[in-house]
Amino acid sequence: MNISDAAARSGVPAKTIRYYEEIGLVTPRREGNGYRLFRETDVHKLAFLGRARALGFGIEDCRILLALWEDKMRASAEVKRIASGHLAAIDAKIDDLRAMRGTLAELVEACAGDDRPECPIIRSLEA
Image (cartoon, rainbow, N blue to C red; front, side, top):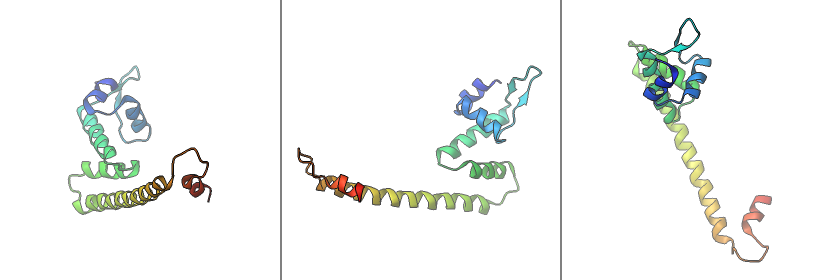
């Protein structure tokens, strides 16, 4: 199948598929005229990568997870280690966002929002 069919079936945009090919995550066959020829296994890989990226895994983690997915003798401990590390990073980002939200909410509450130039939000940003 061609790239547009592979994109439609995997849910991954053609531009992303080209990028994944460029960095070696997928390697479709090439016809004599140079056109990509995607096999069913390529579509499964693309769908796998699409789901992993939707969960926020970085490219290198996706590369490792893809290799583990293809390795039928893999140890699930390695998969769990990668996912646990990613979960911890997400939790840290959530904590940072909550703190950021709290600070911003306090500043918004403290600002009169009237015609006067005095503004705690601006004062905080310039500090």
